[in-house]
Image (cartoon, one colour):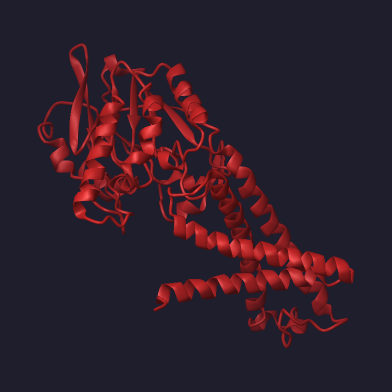
Length: 418
């Protein structure tokens, strides 16, 4: 039996296809007959490929792609569908304008004619054609941009940030911390490019390296080809890590609960195999001479539908009332900062998170940043401050779903404590 969700999704896809077809037909109306039909045939072929790609994207999942070429073929056509979606939104908006009484005089010629059948010689044709051409241009630019973004998936950007922490001991001033997040090793297909990012990290000679979750997409086996590469990450004060929402295997239909637990245990072992110290609702004290700061790592805790495995009380056990002046928290999901840290743990100086990837799409330039993900996460990329507390949200080392990055590049963060 067809599910309600599938019916809604099917209707949505058909609506997008209808509006994009109407827009294309209006632009082709003035072409010669032969040229018109060849372009129309090309459009039909591309539309069928897009629909198949939507199916393949859902059918094969995040990791189990039969081939790399198929993965990128599907992603290109998913980009085409997103371009069509934008065309549909513009065309639908034009349709909705027809029912606004205050615009009746301006859009009089729209009133009694559907978008698909404008009368010859009317003013409506000019406006309709303009809307169609504008929609196709914007949709085409977006599709081309998403195709180009595939070339940026390993273009690591090193962001340098200075964070001034209250009561930071002199011995820790100038401490150089590298933060990476969201590796998503199951999406990788170029070990040499991944290794180049690791080389960039080591060239900075960090004192401490911190990873804030999502080593894999779904299964522990995904990271195996990259264990040797990531085991090259070394720092005098150690490499520490936490788990992200994808690491628990929650998005896989496991035959048994035991297999799911075994997968997680193997993943935890892989952290150790790479020389990483995995913090599971616990803390360590980092010492320099006679002074120390606390590094706290909690398991994933996400607002809304995401699982809440994090247990701050357990992680802080033993140092709740200590004289440690600076506490640094590793928490994969940045929503934890406002949900819990800002309310109940005001002595945590700096929280490091990831999770959002900056949606791998947006505008991210000095002085201005925008991404659709900001309508879901208030803190989604970069440094945030409230009173004496800081949050840094890393844009992610890897990628998932869309096999690229447009505007928001993969990030390596160098944080200097001052």
